[in-house]
Amino acid sequence: MKLEGRIAIITGGGSGIGHEACKLFAGEGATVIVADRDLEAAQRVAAEIAGQGGKAVAHRVDVSKEAEIEAMIVRTVADHGRLDILVNNAGYGIAGTVVETSEADWNALMSVNVNGVFLGCKHAIPVMEKQGGGAIVNTASAVANVGIHGRAAYVASKGAVAALTRAMATDHVEANIRINAVAPGTIESPYFTKILSGPDGAELRRGLEERQAMDRLGRPVEIAQAMLWLASDDASFCTGSVMVVDGGWTARGDRKPKQKA
Image (cartoon, rainbow, N blue to C red; front, side, top):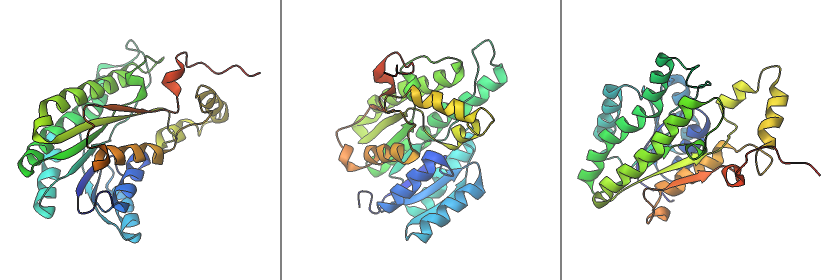
């Protein structure tokens, strides 16, 4: 039980990577606050965890709204006495170059992907400082390290998350708060499931798989396992790190489909 007795908030916990993280954390003994903008999804995950003998509470939150984040953290401390772990996982992507992206779409994406991380940490860190420490895990992306075509706003947002993670880790290391990020590659999440459900889905999938060094997409649980490690005492000497979990995609350099013999 790596997280026995700890209290963890996981945003975006209603689906995909967040869903798997909630299950893993609860399985390791944490009481998990399944936080999501979709309350019904959060409730389904909390019920699933309870059915497996774990402890979980569903909480509706829009991470782009400071008042809602603050209220969630205040309620967590009131109900459970502390906050040991925060996983800032909520986020989404949009397509387009900067020319094609409207200011409204840019601002909306940044308010979730970047402001959500900023606000979560802003209100969690004082709680953790007061209790003597804690762990924060942010969700960046492998694209924080490289440029990809037609995803300007998303790439910028995840680059900001990676940089903010390093800055906060430096600022709060003396308070015994470890702050790290995981940088997933292309994961078979609900976002990609929706994209691949169209008439050209099979062809799109082949293209995505062929550009991966491992010839497949990642699974949400594989990212959740990295989150678990970063949140646990196993990573006690790790702060300010951005852990890339992308099946070797960025290591290959060219990111083009491999030539078949």
